Image: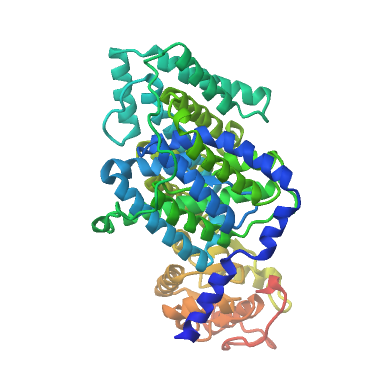
Length: 583
């Protein structure tokens, strides 16, 4: 047993922090502390807003930012990553909260944490690089739209309508606002969003989100704006870890949401770490350790009343821009938020919900990279289709279906593009014709022999088109298939090739092949196509040998006169010509 567990234990040990990971904290602590303070100021309204949007309240967002932010900083694979509640995760959590309540969130968080740790142990981090960019851009756009629409009830100052479909909830909120307008809430939300958007263009280094929220809170208190509903009472501190809300009976029904949460946490965290690496020199994250750190964060945060977390690209970018160089900055961010939770809960509780709605609306707008979307849409029509479908599915359905649809459509379009690379082209065989021949014999050979070169992959997506093209071969006596440029062949391709050979043979046409690669033989042999091609020695190593065999066959059939000194009918050629052109 110990021998069997040894590799797994070594793998887990490799995911744990090493002394070198924390040595960097002593290099420039002043800059890291300042960067952490700045990120905490930026993160505070976002944590409050995402907690409210999830349905569990502002305290859930703060708990997540503190607990998940600290654990992901300690155990994650990036020195610069900042984790906490995010808009993308909120989109996934809203229907879970609506149907299962806090117990569902706790259950999903624990299951997602276990899945993330499993992915880390399985070294799955490297595979995240294969996610198509249009899918990422599409669901980022869709998430931005969902986040913005989720804020409409609070921005309009109306109670949130029942339901978890964001378009339906938004429509009902607008209808309620038309009946009883609340222009105070609208003014606060619009003012906060404008300050953030315009301030970011004027002075990007200033955290205008906290400036706008403080201004809105002060205005609501000074002018007694009763229509601006505040967050409400917050607990002065984090709750003790508890499994009281764990819903064991719902494990089966919550498995799919847990997979979605784990996939989103993995994807967003690794994307954020990649962005952080690109913004610095000499930094490189460990994707498997990042998954491990996020797994621990998602195990712990729900125990303290929080929600599942992931790395936040916006907060990570602020961290890097303000000079962070080690994990100390992210730890400082979590510590500052913890101080706020314990010392300033009464003040935070007075923040108007409309102000937080304005923060998240501005955040959603800033998530939309117009230049990136325009470039992706112009790249190819397929990329544009995948992007739009993923965004629409995120908005109309949910993130799980959106990602699945994006992957399926992207995969189908990629297969179609690869399949189009497969070509069956008729080629002139006279250059490979061995020996000296008269013009009359050249004409006779061309009348009875046709050579085709197969280029590209011969697999299920392209095989049937190949069969149709080959079935249209004119009335000749010998068809030579040059297969050295076949890049790959699967069982479908092998079956279609076998079918085409049989159909040609039934028409009295002999099929000969040249240049079959060793890697192609397994697929051909599995369906019996190789035995058919070897019939009467019709498989050849090179094209000149195949032409010589075809000519011998025509001599034997009496279609060509026998010339003294030239070979008659023969079996499979044994010689090899190394040049690719001769295959």
